[in-house]
Image (tube, rainbow, N blue to C red):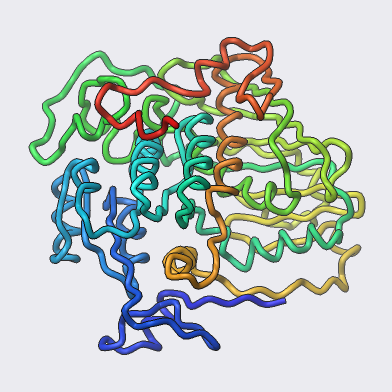
Length: 440
């Protein structure tokens, strides 16, 4: 089976500048030339820069927002007709916006996304979808209520690589799956965790709107290089650690292929939990109810900071190169590995020498969203899927931070018998920063 969608590069090569209006045009389809989406972008540095540029293909960037005026100026130079803001609340007052990309630090995802959806705007929000489990549940509910087109920014989901792995599992090639092991090298050299917050403050640079950056988070002094522009990931006030950063990528093919519901139990191991910062390393154990693709209980183990499952579990050749970020499915008939970015492999290799892989093409995760907005197709990671996925990912942090196993009551968002976990399922917001947008 094959699926196709124009990549941005393919679109640019096939379309002249005069006709640069319709990236959704595919063989056998026809869209009106005036179906251009007016897009606003909240967060235009780092990942926000590529999110903005990718969604712009064939559409119109009408508003841009960033708390860093240097980043904002760079984006304004690229899109001179877009109105500029340092406060996302002011941006949402602009009347001609159809859709919004949200590429802020994790702690601001939920309030911006909820506010935009409640105005009827379509949203593309970077992973992890939210900072807390409660926020993920509410964004899923609000998206359903509003009927808007949603996509979580998990670009790997649209690749042929993951589609091949998912279909191979669903085809039963390795039989029913009993265990899954998933791992990442983050945080590694990307950012630091297990840190004490320094007892000092530095002058806020003139181009940084620090109060706007803090947003819903507690008051914290500006410290040069500590939070903005990137190292916020390791601090619980703003980020979700290595699990939040990479879990929505790496656990996506697991939840997708096995069609997993919410986990029933989660426990974590690692250094003693720190109130301010994520762990230097962590291993999380999830138990899921069985599905049509698994044994009666599916056990999932997450490893981070370079830790990995024992080599003998892979049943791979001795010269196999391995992967710094990947997933290993263990089935009745053999194992399937898929990496980030390595292609799927089946082990033991001799048992699958004649296997024919299914065929897929890469999709473009961004044009999937803009095409769906104009009525052409659907998104691969709508909030109806990515909201529950994010809940599962973040429950690993809840178990770790609470210091005790979580027996999860998904229907009621309750950690049975673990009162400490309750404080990590949701958070209080600073007054005036949009917390009401998540309420019913």
